[in-house]
Length: 205
Figure 1: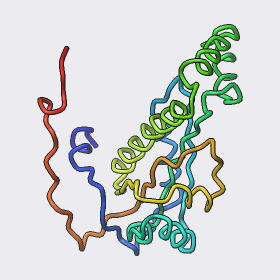
Figure 2 (figure 1 turned 180 degrees about the horizontal axis):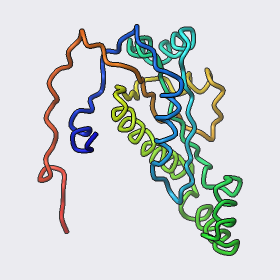
Figure 3 (figure 1 turned 90 degrees about the vertical axis):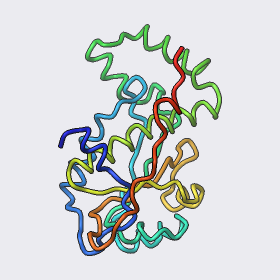
Figure 4 (figure 1 turned 45 degrees about the vertical axis):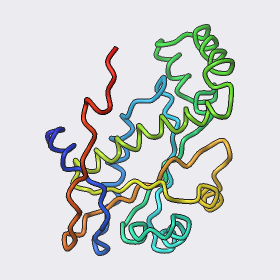
């Protein structure tokens, strides 16, 4: 699908067809393609929790402000950002050294900069996790649309409750939930709301 067309046609699907499942291989294909999303130094600090079973969706529904799409969509994905994803234990650093895109001395200098400047507070670590995981999330929604699959992102949920439900540690943040499935063609979305223009949102220096 041409990207401009995809961009204009992607909508947040308020209604999902409860009778249409998403094939496992399609879910995997969408996620694999989404990993091409950019991230800081290619650290890819994200994890996914894929909620599929009826029982699991019911549990998540109760933590997500009882939003019907969590029950109606065949899949809801929790996008999780890793606050410490930049640290040395990330296997991406070994890949960089192996591929000679980075040497040990440069890596140590980068680690020092991360610890002492870039991510030297929980606020900065949280921002790192959210920013990078959000890039993945938007990429996933575009990839899904290109495959004929609708999505709906949500930030209306109890992060504490979701973390408890899936045993997510405190060094991670639940960035958003994305319901994914096929749009219920018996329903109709409201017309797309107005978007702010270039002149409204831009300052040129």
